[in-house]
Image (tube, rainbow, N blue to C red; front, side, top):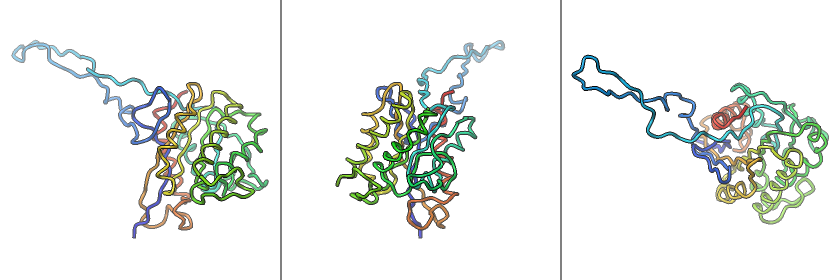
Length: 282
């Protein structure tokens, strides 16, 4: 029996939206990585009967505008999220894939969570399992001193599963939660990005949509959120999602159809990096 596993993808579309600098993923751009896609065409300028026929090279009749270089390939990088980041390591696998593609980052953040416990994946970040967007915003505020020393140039944000998976869950871990998950998600993600911009006005943000099926119908609203909060000097890149059918359970840790195994996280990171690579800048 096939078990659908929704995995989150930080992909970027073939076409950018320059007015908003918000990119919504559909399919990765493979043509920009293939020089043959823009190779000049050859045509004969002399009659075929001529023994001395020459071949002239003409440029393509149409060219595509260069892709915006929105994603820094070096500098300070902070991973922000819930258990998908701190336990499953999905964001860390994306960073590893980008490093394999030639990038060089310094991971910044804290190696402990909101309660002072060690982060399971053992890398600096701002993360806490079980927290929704408002709870994670609280952790970002709590750990701000660690980021003041090394302001991030790139922020990878994976939050929201705990907004939509358990809607209306208000407790001490997830403050400032209304009965409307989207309202809480929007308010706290906006505040989170404002905190990052206080640290670095030019920070680039990759905002990954919650991939639980309960949030699917909210995709347009999250796209609109990205357009509303992006800036020319501080772009917000909103990602799409991808569905992978898992036939043997190897990508699903614990059977909750939420947390990937190490194999699943590595696959996700590699797929995400394929979308981001065309938009990297030095």
